[in-house]
Image 1: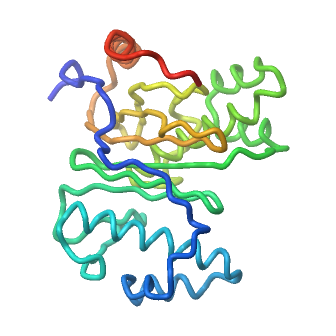
Image 2 (image 1 turned 90 degrees about the vertical axis):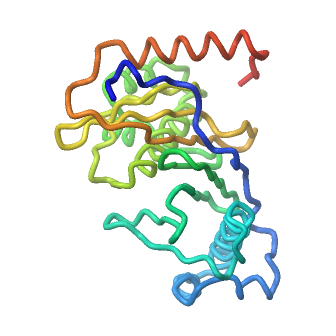
Length: 253
């Protein structure tokens, strides 16, 4: 399928919700977890971190059980060579789980591989230094052009968008984040990620709006061996935004 057939609509994640991980999951919740998950939970030094891990993974299992009709404790997971988990026996069920302290973000769909990332809003004193290492030149220029009071929010927005893309393709830091553009605005767009002579096409959009955090979800749609078509991502994104504006009122950011 050629690049011209790639259409930008939105990420296929009918389940996309936040998790309050500091809510006590209850003593019976751990029965849902596998031995491997319990071992990972036991490795946390602090009780709060252990509780958040348990709460996140119990919530994931319950959500996937609702999606598949299986019992939460019966679900089994496998991991790719780079650590991306998948649900054994359900290849069409895609999911991604992220957390920032006591806040989690869960996305589940049935089309392409998903990536979700969330960050609680907080001071980032070294935002410009981190951006210089991990953002593209144009992203760095846009960040420097912002008023100082807006930079931390913009930095975290861009950071979560890059993380969501990396989680969707499941290759982690093998892909340098400064090699692909996601922007500082919480918009919907297609993203081109170059990997080993190929172009990976993803759809990227913001997570549901919250005042205390920023988040993003991404979906890997296609892979092309040849170079991308100039301007194609911008054109499809513009068409999508135009259609969305006609269909619904704009949500204030």
